[in-house]
Image (cartoon, rainbow, N blue to C red; front, side, top):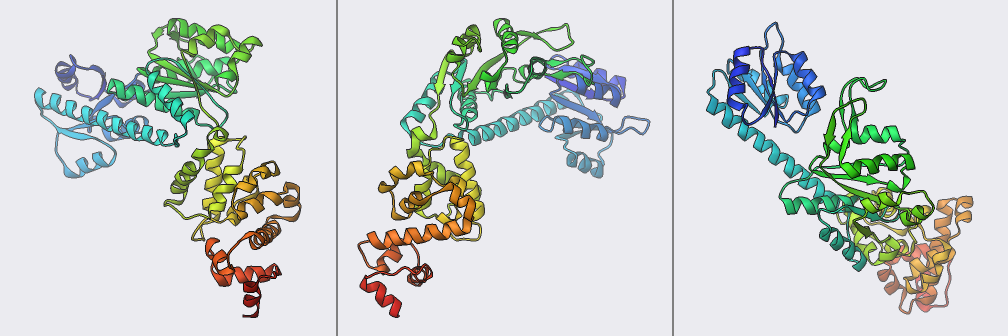
Length: 475
């Protein structure tokens, strides 16, 4: 590991070098300025920082800079006097431990070993948590979805190309692939990603390979690229179908050798990454049209995973719906079954899981003052179109009525409140004409109180020859 040692005493720097030099690569800095330059040019895994640097300089100032750049990497403070206020301040600024001068070699070696091991363990736990969170987006038990997950597990170590419409969850699948290989190797693999859309060749090269200070206007310091940051792990290229042909040629050259140069640098570097890619476009068709290189397609697609759209796994919508309610409402909030039925009837062509997530977030927001989510909370954008009316006969009277009368132009012309009022009248009329039981029973099945149902019928001036309705009107 690269350990930065900031201390103004030459003898102490040399002593630390003797103790730790055989186990770590030490970056010895006699001043804050030199230590700062190491942060800009080197990958630093941890630091030993003297509190008192002479000439009124304080290692606490550098500690703040170090923790700002590397919040998850360890820093051990060194001081000649164990002053409690100083120790407390060090810990508040993010120091992981504190060592008092004079110290022997064994004490230093053990402290550095323990602090660095603890920091690595914490990063592993954090990474594991993030990966569990990302995998939680792959919700459902649909056969096609499970087949896609099984294929990812079988493809451990290979380059994977994920196909799927916008919003189906290609990024969560890529993270899941990263997690599968991490589990097999017993170490958390780095995961970096880039969106290939709207990046020209130079921007893509800079993002992937980094640059040397002065390589171009604005390059004020050295920059590590994603290939270097993902060393020993996975690099995920989203929207790879949008990559220009010139960029494809550059990327193919990199894949052939797994070697690269930072922009403006003449030092050749070796990459150690697995490539994961994703697209919503038909790359084979693009190859035939001359818009995507055949040899590049071959290199990135050792395994191809097709992720089903929401339309292809509507049996998962109830589980997804409740999963997102729990996220946005903070608890398993009750809902009118008709809401779910209306959502199931949508085609979800625009955004799949992502659009369904947006719909549930909208519902949770609109229903904040209500005990449960109602049809009235569903915005016009998320109601099924009239093209879905053919499915209505298999649904509840509430959902069926809502689909039958949906008219987008009318909604936008008359406004949401008036439209919902008309929708409620249609729902009640159909329920009244088709429900076989009494009004009291209908109120129970609609999950409203008897007075509420009678009041809504009266509001809409709905009359019926049914005896129980006449009796209610008299009462």
